[in-house]
Length: 245
Image: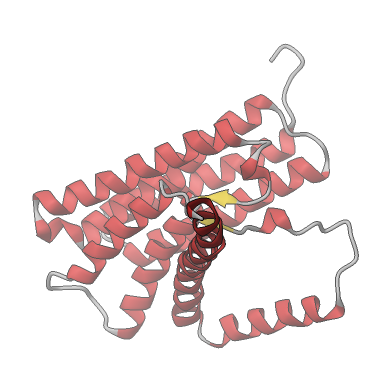
């Protein structure tokens, strides 16, 4: 600390933290859409601070710990409070326990990420990343308001989704991330076309398409996990048969 800290990546982390704090205030005031968009904005700054730190080689232990604390507020507390006040409050104890489970599983996910950095987490994410879970909650709020309007009755699907996201964060399912893409190397031309196509699809109707893409990301990790599990079973069967013979 006596040598100082790097300004740019930590400033981006502060921006993410600020939007996360604003999301909490907006949710408490009942401005659920503002809260949801603030969480989405926080994910952008969260991605930028890590990308800038790696690109400029300014990653430090302080920055990693500060980023984790910021993530817990922006992607744990903020979406937890948002989904509770917006929907789960009507369920009583089961509702606030679901919101708390989302927060505590997010904290456990961050702790495991910090421990595994430089090993498996350097290649892929073990469990659903906490920003990914937060994006699902925030895009769900925007999607629901755009399609159906104000939420009035109990919605058991939202309750189930909250619990599911919490358990996915502490699972061992592998999820891919932007950090796997090496921007310093040349990529096929089709990759650029695909990126432009995705942006165009999102711009067509952001409230719906952002939610669809976030759900697709969650389901893709589950599907890939099932495929990997089945392959392991198939490859282990011949070995087990050989041992018996």
